[in-house]
Structure formats: structure tokens, C-alpha cells
Image (cartoon, rainbow, N blue to C red; front, side):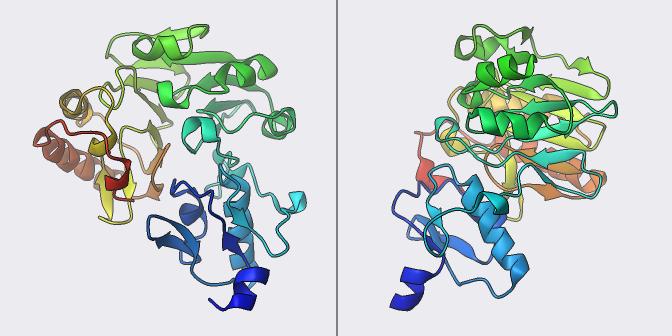
Length: 297
């Protein structure tokens, strides 16, 4: 990249924490270089420019900087529908208090929504997320993503959900999931306790199509497969293997929507087969020291 381009084009500044969010939203334009994100090339058309604007508005450290350095609020695409049904929308505006985790809005047939994990907090963002209709529930997948949960729930007048294993991260939750058995929490929405990454990790499954996996598993571009983050497993990789083994026969979905790592849409039979293989691979893993640099994005 030439000096003039570096000064006047898109760039990633030194605050980048290598959370992968920008690379998910602007593939081919932003990539990993020396353990952080970097602009690989400047946009060639309006579509690519919009991808970079999405990356900039999602980046938790505001490290993705447009020409001139100032973000244009009018170019903020969030919440952003992930498919033509609009059932799931990516919230963007990832929070540094959740290590830059993705969060989602799940639209329901009656016009209400559920928020899965939380973006950064601001009243203006809350108004944006509830504009299409009331948000009735804030579903936390685990303790690491609990920041801002109470503030969003109070603003929306919504119920805040968490599992008892991570209750100390949201002790004022309105609904507490218990044990390891699935629980239907609304029509078409199932909570599946999934201890492993943390003691209280939970998957949320919606409409037989969408799996909000938190940090239990994700799509890796490196391996082109579903993976667990065994290098950042706070509770027990053996419990994570047990959760996968227990759930493998009942997990059918086509959209994998994690907190960290990439999203992926595949036929349900393909996803189910990959989950079975993931369970088998995870059973061979042994505990290891936490190492964020070992994540295979």
C-alpha cells in the first residue's frame, strides 16, 4: 500500500485487538497480517465500500477508519439482515466489554424481537434495535457476553435470560435456565444448556433453522469447518465434548451464528454431519492453557 493510499484511503489503526469482526464483514478487503487486521486493498466499487462501512461500524475498538477518519452515521447498516427473510439481523456495534462478540436480533412472527447477546450500549442504538417492533427478551449465551444485558433489558422492558452456571455474571436476571435439558422459552425458540466454554453456556435454537452458539463452536475460515475454541475454554473441554455428544443427535439447523468466529449457512444434513464429527474430534482434546493467539479464525 503506497504512502498516499495509507494516508487517504481506508486503514486499520493500532487499537485493533484481532477480534475478527471486520474480516467477517469485509472479506478480501480486510485480512489478518502479523496478528491483527489490516486493509488488504481499497474498495473497487460501491458494494465493497459498503462492506468496509459495515466493518467500521461493527469494530469494537473503532479501529477501521474511512478516508478522512470520520465515520458517517448515514452509512451505518445495522441492524443488518442476514438473509432475505429478515428473520435474523446482525446488531453490529460490537462491544469491547464482550471481547467484541457478535450479537443478533431474532424477529418473531408477531412482530416482536429477541436480542441474543448484546452490542455496545447506547440509548440511540437501543432505539434503533427496537424500531421494527418491541424486544421482549435478551438471551445471554454465557457470562463473557453478559455486559449491557441488564441495561438493554430495562430499556426494552424485556426479560433477561442466563443459565444458573453463569448466574453471578447477571445475578438480577429475570429468567434462569437450569440443568442440561432443553427448555422451550418461546414458540419456536429452544434453549439448550451447553456447559464447556463456561459452566453456564447455552445454545439458542430458533425455528429449526438458526443456531446461536455463543462461544461453544463457530465456523472457521482456516479449516472450512465447525470448530470449538479449545485454546480459550474457561470451564472444561471435557464437558464441552460431553455437551456436543449429548446434543449431536438433536442439533439440526442451517444457520450457524456464533458470538466469535464466522457465520455459515449450509443444508441441515451437512450441519448435522459436521456436528457429529466435531463431537468426535472434541472427545480427543485435552485441557490446555488459555491462548488467544491459537484461535483458528
